[in-house]
Length: 50
Image (cartoon, rainbow, N blue to C red):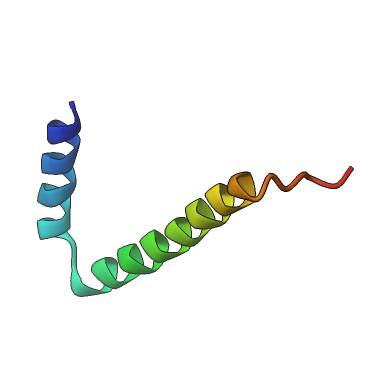
């Protein structure tokens, strides 16, 4: 299943215009930052404020 998703994403990436690729890179970077912050918060055992 993972392989299928990777193949699909590679196909779509090949079809994307330069502007679309730039936007996709921006979105990936933002989502990666949020993912890092999520796991960093868990590692530090931080809590949400009420």
